[in-house]
Length: 405
Image 1 (cartoon, rainbow, N blue to C red):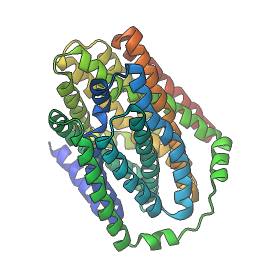
Image 2: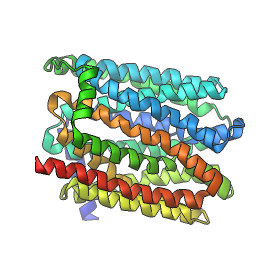
Image 3: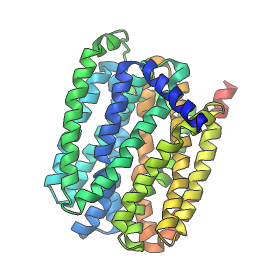
Image 4: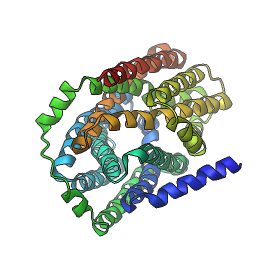
């Protein structure tokens, strides 16, 4: 207990020592993720109940958002390095407002797919740009802690959102989307004011990089190490994407009151992150990022195998807890590998290039939907366990190239 209190105190001191903009983005991340997780994890169930789409088609519609995100992050990171973080973040946030209000209004599958592509595009603009801004304002030796706190903020929001989504969704399938749009609008207005009051223009004015889209593409083509990291991330994303798309359909069809159980699975996912983020971050800080990624992928695989052979709510919940421990180790460490590789003046480009991982989030629901439809959940999650472990080797090859110079 004393050790846990000590870790909490250290985290509090870390927050106090960070730039106010970083803390503002962390707080906004909690609110924004609570809003989006109130609606988006239930999109697959919503479509299966209100349309005649098959599991494969639902996977394609949802995956289209990630496909748009793959190109968007690549472009958005470069634009943020050239035109400033503030402009790109605000564009993404107000685009989100329109997308979620659209989800609450339109019911046509094609329009929903287009709106989800806008959603993916906005996420791919906002996520790498906000990460780049936070890294700009954080000393290099404290960036792993910052990435971990950001991931913790994400999951505090995710712990709240799914339960609210299940509550509102039982009364109206469109209400969570409308509430999400409203929250994003409030967040965008407040964040804009904070960025101006804390002097973001002066911060951006200190740097005048001349980054073009062509230069960004050359980085991806020429930086072989980055390509290995990206391929590893794509393979890992194929496995991870099953958690919020095919898992929801699998649970909904496997147990009584599957929607409520899936909401609890999402909440357990977030609670485990909140509970274990601090101690696992301390453990990972003392080890190389590749070690944390490797252990994280093993835990991902064990969680997938648990899903494959679960027979009731308890086993699903335990499997999610194991799966989530893999998240805690994997995501901050993979961000740190890219941060260590990126030159300061092209940090937005490198973070934006990570959006190529979205190719895995596009392929994953589609492939997972076919496996679920034709072979069942047991085969689906067993295959994904194998795929996830395979991604470790790509990170290892990339890191060896860095070590050889």
